[in-house]
Image (tube, rainbow, N blue to C red; front, side):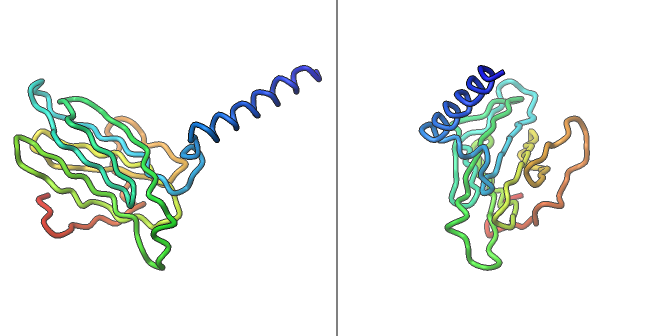
Length: 160
């Protein structure tokens, strides 16, 4: 029995050291947005280009996203930068479809919590979303959007 505790303890120490040096802090941080983008076009030649996803100070980009493809990212929005009372984390998406630029200035989240968001882009470029406050899971299938975790807004220049 003592040998089992030694093995478990050693594993935990190794795991903690690996996370410290490899940057696994996004697993337990509360200032993250775990995002998934699904491009729902069915024509194999269709693709989104120059795709940029922003969540507060965090951002990521993709050169293109093919029809039917799903991409995921975990963005740290850096709650230290936005400790102004009443400030919100802005989640936004910018992309091109057939050379036309789309700006989806989508969601305002209260800071200090983590969020999971699923963005679905249809063949015409329209965005729908579902979100929840972490820890959570978004149900698969045709479940209705959960819009209770964020406030939708349209910024200047929004085309959607």
